[in-house]
Image 1 (spheres, rainbow, N blue to C red):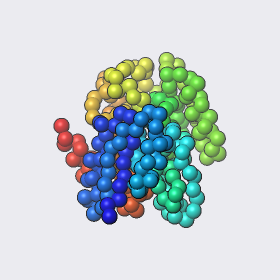
Image 2: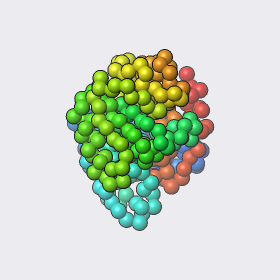
Image 3: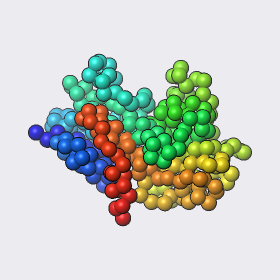
Length: 283
C-alpha cells in the first residue's frame, strides 16, 4: 500500500515539495504519495488531526505554521525515535512524523541550509561571522545548526529588536551555545561590522522589498544566501552590487531539507545533486 505524505502551508500552490519527493521516490524505489494541502490559517491543528485519522504517515510544514507545528508536537524519546532523530532543536518545526499515536516534530531546515552551503556551495562555515536576517520561523529553524557549524559570531538582524532579542534568549538557554557570540540588532542598527556569511531568512523577496543593509556589510570573500528561491531577489541584487563573492538562492536548501525529511520518514537518504540540477534546468 502506498504511504501518504503531504506539505501544509498557506499559501501552498507554489510549493515544489511534491515534485521533489516524487523524484526522491522514483530514485529510491519507495512507494509513497505526496501532495500539497492548503490549511486554513485557523485550522492547522484540525487539518493535522484529519490527516492522521486518514492514515497519513507524516507531513512537511511551511509558512505560516512552523511555530504551531512545534506546539502540537510530542517530544518522544525512545529507541525508535533516537534511531531516526538527526535533527536539531528549534522552536519551529517543518517535519512531522506520525508514529505510534504520537506527533513527532523535527526541523530539517537548518540541516538543509548547512548542507547546501558547505557541501553544494563548498563554503565552510567554521569560524565564519554570520548575519542572520529575520527572527521568524525560518530563522528559528536554522539558528542552532548555523551556530554549531560556525562556533563563532552570529548576529540576528530583524525589523523589530524585541523579536530578535527573544530569539537570542531562546538560544542562550542551551549551555552549548553560551560560549559563542550572539547578538540581536534591529534594522538600521548595524554600524561598521562586516560578515563572512549574510543569510536572508525573511520573506522580503516575495514583495521585492529592500532590506536596510550597510553597503560595506560583506567581508572579502563573503557569501550572500537568500532562503527564497526561483527568482533574483532585491537582497541578491544588492549582494552582487556590494561585493559578495558568492550569491545563492535557497533552492539547494529546499532540496536538502526535503531529503532529510525523506530520510526521517523512510530511513533512506536520496541523492540530492540530480534533483537540484533538474530543478535548476526548469525554466
